[in-house]
Structure formats: structure tokens, C-alpha cells
Image 1 (cartoon, rainbow, N blue to C red):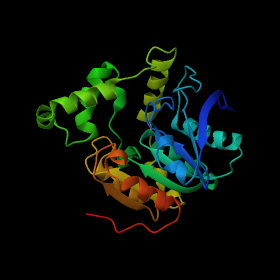
Image 2: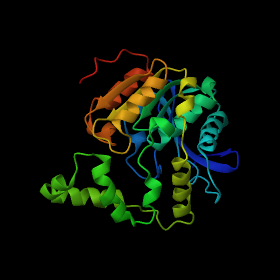
Image 3: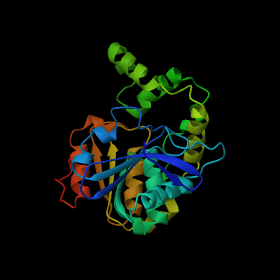
Image 4: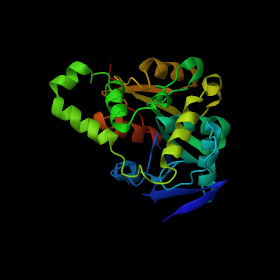
Length: 273
């Protein structure tokens, strides 16, 4: 299994595909052992793709001390250096988009192009939903709480009318096959603590690479207004909304092809209303 020593931890990573270099930074709780994942999607058909478990998660190191968003960005640039990459295209999803913002701000020379998906800048620009406030709930209770927030169309009336689908969603979201591993809960908690402190709002103007901001129209975690705020602060940023919530990349078939086209420097089709 591929591991790289980066700073104070060992980082587990996987690399797949051929083409331009692409670093993928995953969201809250990301674990490459859970399949299917982004490596099973279309990105490796177009790019030399690098994905990894962030500190505190999956098979990477889980030191029991506070983590910071800038530290997560240092992990990313350190991993790139460890495998011999001086720069790459970057896709950051949700929490990974927060890390990607820090990476593009603190290490502009390593980010060739940037896709920020269902994420937020924090501060006055708006934060994503405060997941750290739900740690007292068990996994099923958290799942039930978040389903209607992740996609605002899935409210109580929808759940009552689609009971079987709703219960399947709860079971899927609540499932965690690695919950009993040593350090698992601690690592997830440390990630959420770092996420709660995320704030790049006053520094977004330092992002100079081509940037695409993608979001779901019905996302109650990374709000549409927050996406507009980010786009207003990043020079030349393109903003796209898709039919879906926080999982719009799985819900709208246009999303991933448009991300790929952007990363390859191709013109995107006209945005829909």
C-alpha cells in the first residue's frame, strides 16, 4: 500500500490514470477504503489523479492534537512533493474545498487550476453548516438531521412521501464500517474542530489561478449565497449551479463533465438558469 512521510504523519494515497496531474482533496470523513469513490469515476480517464486520506482519517496518521486548516494544506503540498509533483490541477470538495483554498492562497505556485465544489470561505463570506455542533448525536440521529439540510428538497413532507427511499438514505449515511478502529472517532473530531475555524474570506483575492466554483442549487450545507460571495472575491472565477444538493456531483450528470472540461482548459457550455 502506498504511504508517504509528510511532516509528522504517514499519508495513505492512491494514484490512477494518465494525463495532466490532478490532486483531489476529499470532504469530511473521507476514507479511500470506502468504495465506490472518486477513483472509480471519470477523473482518472482524463488525468493522472492523486487522492489521499487526510490526517485523522482513513489509513493516514491520526495524531491526537489540534489540527489546523493551514496544516491540512501543508499536508497536501507535502504529499505532492513526496511523489515528485511540483504543481497540479486541484479539485477540492466540501471540506476539501476549504483545504484547497488554503493551498491556493499559501502555495500559489503549486496550483495550476482550481475547482471548488460545495464548499465555503468562512468568516464574513459565510461558513458551511456547523457539523461540529452535532457530535453529541449518534450516527443515525446525525444522518436524520442532515438529510434535509444536505438537500433542502428532502424535507419532512418529502421523507413522509418517500419513506422507503428516506430510510435507505439514513442507513447509507449512518453506515461506517471503521467506526471501532483506534483513533477513528478522535480523528474525525479533530477534523471537525479545524473545519469550525476555517476562514479564508479576507484572503480569497490571493487566489490567482483559473477557478471554477460549483454548487448544488438545493445545498443547505454550502449555501448558494456563499458560493456567490466566493465568486465575487476570486478574480475571474466562474460560478456554476447544478440540479442537486450537497451531493450535486452525483445528482446532476452535467457536473463532472463540466469540471473535467474546465480543468482541461476547454470552453464550458452556457450556464443554465
